[in-house]
Amino acid sequence: MWKHEFCMLRRVFYMIVEELQPCLRRQDTHLHQAISVEKWIAIAVYMLAHQDSYSTVATHFGVGKSTVCKAFIQVVTGIELVLMQKTVYLGDHRKSWVMTPFKGVLHPHQSVYNKQLNKMRYERAFGCLKARWTAPLEVAEENVNSIIAASVKLHNIVDSDGKGSKSLKAGA
Image (cartoon, rainbow, N blue to C red; front, side, top):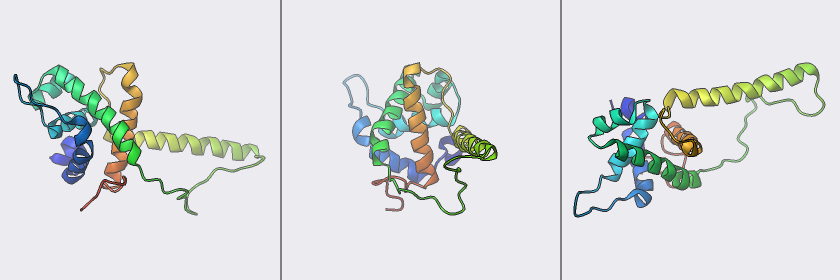
């Protein structure tokens, strides 16, 4: 059930919580207790994993619609600002079996091959993203880039089982 709801293992979710905790920690007020960082992140990840409306997610988590909206945007921004900075770059990791484009002066058939190869890479990448993460339908245009960046980062963390970040420690 956990993996279906959040599209990741529970331990990977808690590694993400640990990383985002400092920038998402809420303060209690004299009127109400703050929502936990875990719930804040769960709301946002659930929004990315399912194409439910803000009101449906609000009912699911027992919070208000405005809380869902605020949690979603703040978590997505936190992922973009915190986790994107912790990406490990492996340099040129291409292998001999990876299809590469032709270089130099190209024959017409080679140009067609290069175009199809590039198209296939982008379609596959976005197809994988769309299969795991969906964006809410009701989103402001200025948040689209942050949502895409957060989806890509979450996708990479989940695919690497939490090992795709310098400080995300799988099994530690």
